[in-house]
Length: 219
Ligand code: HEC
Ligand code: HEC
Image (tube, rainbow, N blue to C red; front, side):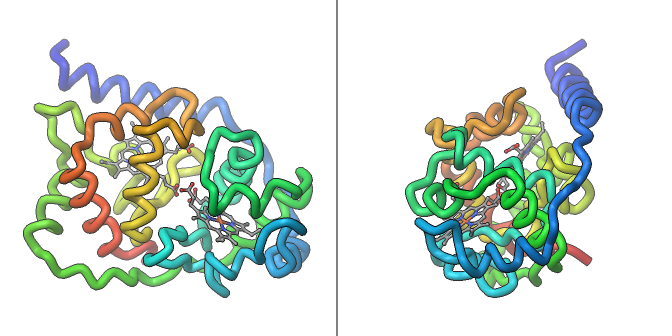
């Protein structure tokens, strides 16, 4: 088996393993979650101050869209800010006082909203073309698999393990890839994403972020 085949087999096995190991049932109440999103956790700001009234996020602030994302994924990420597996000075304080039920409720609320329309105005076509190549074909010489291998058809996400990244704000995508590189994000237990992040150069990060932001988050 050569390196390329090895990488493909590794990706497929890892995806199967992850899928099989997790099947927690949803238990959040979206109405209570909506209330909590407007009140905040007591020490932080209401979610909409940064993530917008419809969970659409904001490119300038690197505030991700969280509307329409998988409920369990959202729960797990908020939990990660509480435990320190994710570390971000702007975000962590906004959820640290919520209890388990409240986290499930908020996750259920945001999961129930529609994903936003793509807002990217990027028209640098050379950059977008380079990004598209990396996202859809990868770069086998550098062991970079296509993002869609894990993030699913059109990069719109697969189950609770592989988040949708299509239509996400470029500033946020960039910030996450760098967070894996510099150790501020450790949510990825089997290092699937971390391994990819560590192989991406700054120019490649720029290109994939711009391209992903320019494609639709959903149909
Ligand atoms: C002051 C601005 C601010 C407020 C208020 C805020 N957030 Fe965030 N949020 C951020 C930033 C910035 C990030 C990205 C941080 C990082 O790089 O990890 C983020 C990330 C997230 C993520 C991770 C999304 C993903 O795709 O992994 C979730 C979930 C989230 N916020 C939920 C909430 C909820 C729920 C509230 C309200 C209780 C809230 N946020 C309030 C700024 C904010
Ligand atoms: C081998 C599988 C795999 C491949 C290939 C992969 N990712 Fe990921 N990615 C993941 C997993 C798993 C997560 C979720 C990690 C976690 O649980 O926090 C993730 C999360 C992300 C996130 C965070 C999304 C959010 O809402 O916070 C971004 C951004 C991302 N990936 C970008 C990319 C890009 C760009 C590529 C292609 C260059 C790529 N990924 C290729 C597995 C992969």
